[in-house]
Amino acid sequence: MLEVVQKPWVESRNAVNAIEIAISTPMKGMFQESDKLWKELSKHVSSEKIEECGAYYLRFRVIDMEGEMGICVGVPVRDKIGGNGRVVPFLLPKGKYACLRYVGHGLVANKLLLNWIKDQDLKMDRWEDSKGDAFKCRRETFLTDRRVQPLKKKWIIELSIKLDD
Image (cartoon, rainbow, N blue to C red; front, side):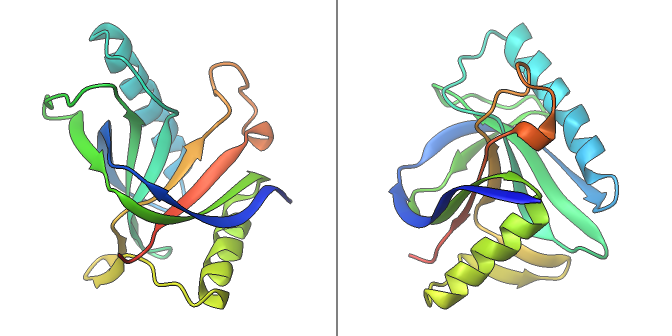
């Protein structure tokens, strides 16, 4: 089930410093893996006393629903930070984004936003990769703090996809 909290829109965003942990994983089991990454990143932020300046997110680098998904779990940070091999810096890119806020089923929300982008004749900043569909920046931002509300079916999530410049 999907509850649309805010209908699709386009907005311009500035570049934002972030830190991430990236992996490749099959679609089946991806959310269990991303949960492990979230805990690892959260622990790193806490132990290194890193100042967060936004909500945690799941970024899709490469999508192959039948194969491996290239994902990152990340969080915006106040200052540019060097990596440690496992946790790496990333600059969320400046540009226009198509966005949708929802509660519920992520696959349905993704289809809804992708169809809206197509209907609006917008172009995503994406390309074909040998591993699947690659994106400059496609992410789900968890606006509900999972440390406060553990039930994912109650989270407000913002899906955003960077559009071509």
